[in-house]
Figure 1 (cartoon, rainbow, N blue to C red):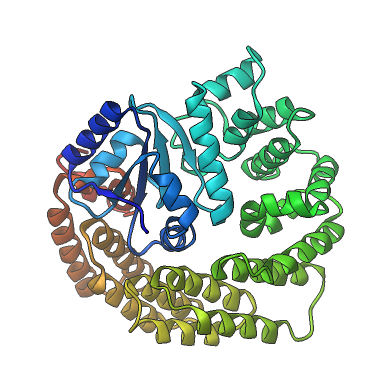
Figure 2 (spheres, rainbow, N blue to C red):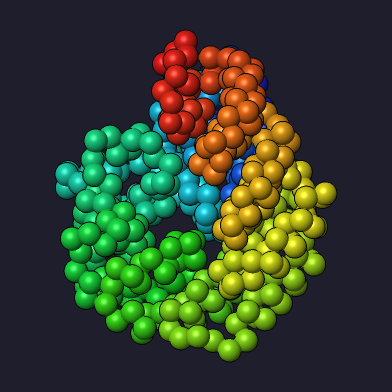
Length: 441
């Protein structure tokens, strides 16, 4: 049993899919991603392969748009897609119902998807719910509050927010549902604290909010995606840091041993536990614990999608633990079996750069560029290689010129798409504005 994907190979395919959704009066679920992207691979392993979600997907017309498809970046600009992955649920008329966060575990994602379908069936969506919540025009139901709290604010691209300030909007929503929906209020408060980055906030008040969430096992688990990724940063915006770190560390320890979670999520929880432990004090045997966790997780991982994101998490955990040499061993061992080894070559380049091995770093950046597949991916890797040469060996005119020639070839291969969305953002990273003198710039 698998999702019946409609592959979008050009603009006409997506237009036809929207027309079909309208004729069927059926929502359209759009997945925008890339082969090499670790969160995309996690979504494939943790969510799209889940039987419960496959069954739910039958209620929508499911479309997949790969960022390396010809013309994909222009389509992405049209529909406000940038970050890989972006997951959008559209109404049959083409309006957005909501954007869903990729970080949720499979069970939570299915629940959020169900909520989005229910809100749409009731005649609402994220935009209508946001307007009503901020204006006070009407009371929101539990499903609408859940929809807003599980909205993918990181991939919004101004579609829902418009010109509104993200932090102010999230904190206003948290206040509006405080005392109405505790779960939504907690999640929105966490999002709001992160968006504010600690600016203009009350550290003591932040600590109260965080302690209430961290110490409630159910509430902490419901927000595991936020806490695993950003728990350390949240603590930095609050007072009572040692107390908060100790409580969250206990929650992370439970998640790290939770059999029902996917291996990447368990390892991410173990990484969080390690980082929190280091906030409190140096821990004897911490490195060995991390090494054992990583080795055990990798030994069990066979699914290529799960393994790709697992290796990425493992390398981060090992580097955090001061085990850079072991991280490099993991990466080198993974290259022959990976479906996108060029992604891991960038990590090998970064490791070489950190230890001062300029020649090694540039060699890995070059190998990554040479191995990259797909017009958008090749352009991105080509920009990375050229920028690295200019930064690390600005005197090497010959290699820089060769890299520039390669990038020109990749721009030509991408065509007009070279000056759209993610591709354009990559070219804007180059110091010389001549690279922006394209046909659509």
